[in-house]
Length: 638
Image 1 (cartoon, rainbow, N blue to C red):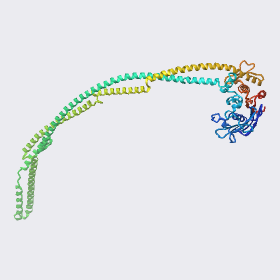
Image 2: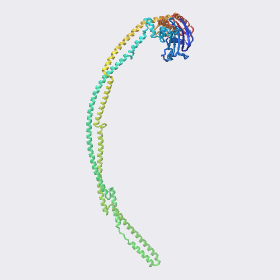
Image 3: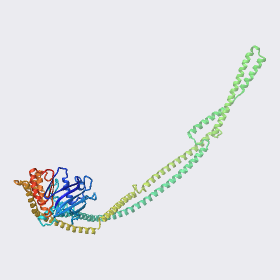
Image 4: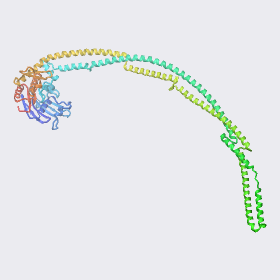
């Protein structure tokens, strides 16, 4: 295949064209001029743009990276020659989400479609290799000159150096076997560890089931014993309560009888005291303090005697009359008999007599009034006692003393009966409180309460045992049927043995595959290394004459005088690029179909080479260009 012309609306390329020739094509242009874009466009025209790729951190898919800067639809055209016929490939975009999805392949200058060429297979049909092999062989992107391994490239090279078949790859087979092996066991993951865990869990469940059944039997025995103990305690508690109630009732009845008797006696004593009080209050003196009454009675009797003496005292009014008559006589004499010289004396004497008569009259009157008042006061005192004389007062006082003595005796008896009643009532209250304590069958200290607490404890023990048994039953139900578990365990053991046999067989297959791969490696790696070494020696003018290539296409090179190959870390950037360019060219030689010559596309591959080695590399590329089209993009003049 020879590419003749490219026309692109792709990235910064806005309808630009690039014409190419057979053999070596060198496109020199400065950086940022679109060289890498043309390379990407060639790949896109042959293999399309993957619209399923998504943007990731540090990575931008082609559908975004090469979207036309002008805003136009991504599209392009490639004119090429294949098998002596000119073909024009066209890719356009109808949906923005599917860039360059619309495809056509016609013979140049006509509308006649090329049979067998589609958007999905055109690249492989024209180059003879898949997109993956193309990118790892004849398509060298900028900064990606080193070859990276892939199953498709490995198939390609293995087919060339072994059977010729491209449907087998050690990497794919190794990965598949390892995947099968990992699916069975990988550290603690895989079917075997899962089965081991399931078998362990099943064994543990069977053990738990057996233990739970044994525990349930033991707890059922304890429950039966606890229920028998509850029945015994309940019977004893009921009998104790019955006895306690009977004794308490008898004590209360006896106390009620004593209270009734004491209350009757107190009521009789109270009635007697009230009767004696009524009699005492009915007497003249009434209910008073005897000592006070005795003092008052003594004073009243003494007063009565004094008043009696005053009232019985004799009064004589004669001095009043005598002095009054003498005064009248003296006045008459002064008027009629006594001489005038003595008349004044006579009247003075008469005045004295009249004054004396008046004084005697006043004194008599006062004495008379005092006697009258004494009689009235005496009557009043005697009236207080309803007595006729002083002896009556004494008799009244004697009657009071008799009545008061009877009242005091009755009051004493009432007080004694009240005290006895209070004592018996207090005893009743104490007995009732004690009886309540005795009849407190929950919090008391009596035998029935103690038996009740023991019964409650036993019942709680029964409840706990029942709950525990129910819990164990639930756990047993949750664990499952032992027959089913046993059958599952046997099935798992059989499956485990089968998987273990498969695991051993896969391990044996891996060992066999590695041995076969080592044999293939001994054939294709030396061949690839030998061809790459020839290219390396040509470019370096014989300085590096050996290249060692590993399975992953990493390489080491050796100077002619060195005894040990140099690792890539010890090579300069230019030498490293030369070594990987030689490997690339060797891969192209071995991996690409000799009948379908695929163009070699190089994007700034020689940028790190000095002038001398650049010229040597160009010499090699010119040799290669004799067999296949070489398209070299470079930022420096060559």
